[in-house]
Image (cartoon, rainbow, N blue to C red):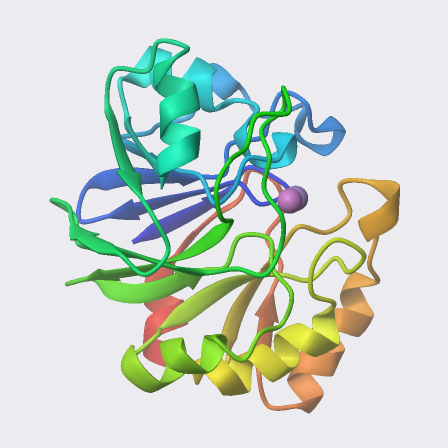
Length: 233
Ligand code: NI
Ligand code: MN
């Protein structure tokens, strides 16, 4: 698995040769101006909820790549109405086996509406299980006891958690989440993009270190192999 960060909560993760793109928001992100949205690879686009900072580039990338879009029933209906041909609607609690592995939709405590105000269903996170390893992409969420279910019934190798505060968990909550999900390798997301979610990165990484966990913060455009994430744990 290779993990590439495109800024905010947008990650490209290559699983068993398939390119999974999470929460595409690149062209509207001032911090990601150096990313060429037209070169972003996608075989699957997974969208956690309808807020613009998670969906803005979904249509553009889906139309160029023909990627299968995976999201809530409501978000898929909205995208299909705009010409998306390849899609798979899901909802919280459900899972599905794709060619790269399985996707389970888990709860996220947040809100969800589409950029034009349409209802977007429940926000969600995704647990991905594959022969190359398992990870949890939390989307936008508060710290929630439901995360214990993930830790109790899945073996998570690494997790992508929001740490920017104001709209989602703060870094201290993400640290508590590591106990719930029983995974200490955390990739931070949803920070620094807007004024409300600026964080002190050095302090945040240190907080994790002091608690015996690891907070990994990518540079925008950086790619890392998950091998180190998985074997070190
Ligand atoms: Ni949101
Ligand atoms: Mn957001």
